[in-house]
Length: 281
Ligand SMILES: [Ca+2]
Ligand SMILES: [Ca+2]
Ligand SMILES: [Ca+2]
Image 1 (cartoon, helix red, strand yellow):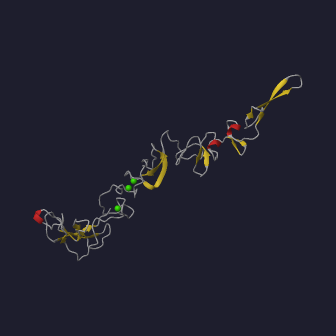
Image 2 (image 1 turned 180 degrees about the horizontal axis):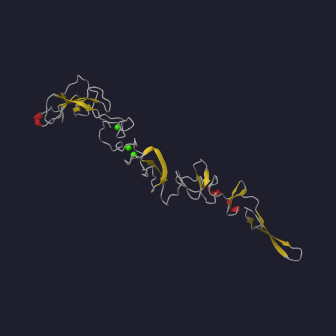
Image 3 (image 1 turned 180 degrees about the vertical axis):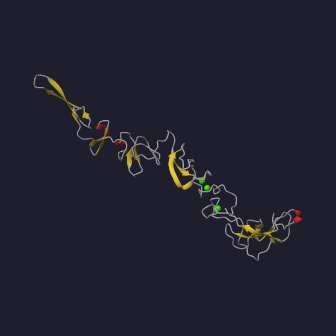
């Protein structure tokens, strides 16, 4: 406020106050400032920019710098612009409205805003394709009122048997035609189906490459495909000892051939198991 003493025309001196607007009054010259070079030249509720004082912006207004905001926070928001915000608002929280929110909600102090994943089949593993933000301590709910989860490791969220912990084999697909039940390496077949029909069982040797029955202690050495010792790896033994001997897709029936792999069995006999299903995971 600029104060100017004036004569009131009837013998008295009065102070006439002039509103300086957003500018401060210069105490030295007793007059309103007309330009600014720093925020101190403006009233507390204003900032200096382009030599002019501007009123501080309210929460929600688009801003460039924190000093423009009455709150002191200018935060990047979901419309790719910065907005004056009621508080600090790190991503993924959003301050489009001027209030820092996590998917429309204010998180309790100290709780981060984090991605949650839908877990429809309730196997504890979330679906990466269905995610929402939520406060750390409050899982969002799905249509069945089941909690979302923090991980996104499910490969098929409509069957709880399909999950990264699965170690069993399955003869029927999981629900979408796929047999990938353990969420890794695609469809893994339980039994080999690459060995040729003409392949026979042979002693692959084992345990420092002793033949089957060596002093009665080496067994389970017969197989269709053997591991051959190499320079840096002197181990040996059967790599494949059971096979369909023809291509069998997951869920398909076939005759399973196996080498005589019983403990202590030391012969090239071949056992057959007709109508065996190729199981997968
Ligand atoms: Ca799941
Ligand atoms: Ca699942
Ligand atoms: Ca798999």
